[in-house]
Image (cartoon, one colour):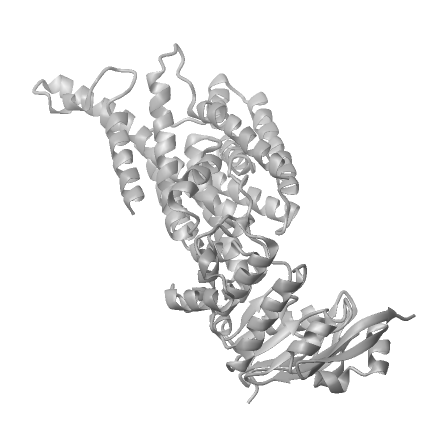
Length: 251
Length: 319
């Protein structure tokens, strides 16, 4: 049984095909890195799963049921989403921000909020105003907000963008731990070395299609990197996992 | 809860004070006088003149405070306010047009004006609008509404009609009767009920529209509830009191440090705070003895405009 599946979804915006027959699914305990150049359709794919838009053709399934017939509140309990550019309009406290993750459940489960803050290592910040935190601290708190939903399915759009290396590693460690504990995780990212190190599987989107899908070591071969990303890479081994670092831009 | 209880006590004290102050030096205790003529006069002054004025100040203040808090939450913009955004002046224009063309349902004119204003703003400025665009759109709308109201004033067929129109332009709860209260009350209450449903959605909007949507909030319904609730409550209030500015701007800023940002506490606090502030302002203008009584809308603008300027300056410093 898959937690989430896109079955042949296509989406056009203003006559441009953003997604072209994309099929992808993920199971419990699996962490998929969604990678691809800017404008490849990564964000659009996530947004279809959160119900912002409906696909022009194909379908999205959540726990094997059709997403389109699921009430919004039920969808919100089964799937947590962290958007690309998070906003904070008011100086609400860290605890209040994380507690918003309980909104779909209609409770203020203090235990879930505490667990989420603990998971990202931000328990000591609970009563601070969100607007007074550094960018890295805020990113961890907003991640905790998504964890507090306790949906078991996390969709994250570039959670490591604009973060320093320490906070990038902290975010990826939290996600890895969630996947090891049984959550299904989809994470959009641009950092190929971080993606290859942390994810079980990578799905490569290119011009609205899946160009490759599988274990990082297997699919990220030189021809694909050249074709999709226009780069060559240097490869290495670390802690039993291979990683790669972009080395040259190629025309 | 302690703060809300304290505010309620303050409001009750102000109601008692308000029923004892006016042009004639009659205290509510005269109602219990043994002299029949004195008691009857007191009844007329307190029950027929001072009480409707008090009730309208409370209803209007609460509507403006509540609508201000909801609009600020919806637009995630601390400068949103029914007055600044031109909603009050457009509602006043609606009431003036209804009056001018001899239409009896002046309240309906006020609500139609309020609704038109909010819809125009949402269309003109869009949903994800910056402060500047929103304020420019508001300035345009408010200028147009005041210009058209002034045109009606200019073309008024009689001095009596100009006086009536001027009333909506300046804003006041003086010389209002129970009829005015009964006309506006049902729609104001209905507006409050609609506005009260926005609380959870507004809380989620603190982290942006995408997060709110992912948490199951129906953004379309939320937007329309805020728009229709504001148009009903503010439109109905303005149609019987005229445009009264700045209450909706000032009250949420005063309340947030006291009760925090969660709507479940902020919205009732802003309704109570608006009622207290407007009733206190109305008592204030009755205490200041001038040969001509200051209009309430003029007083709130004189107090509110500097507050607005300070807010803008602080925002500029942060930018």
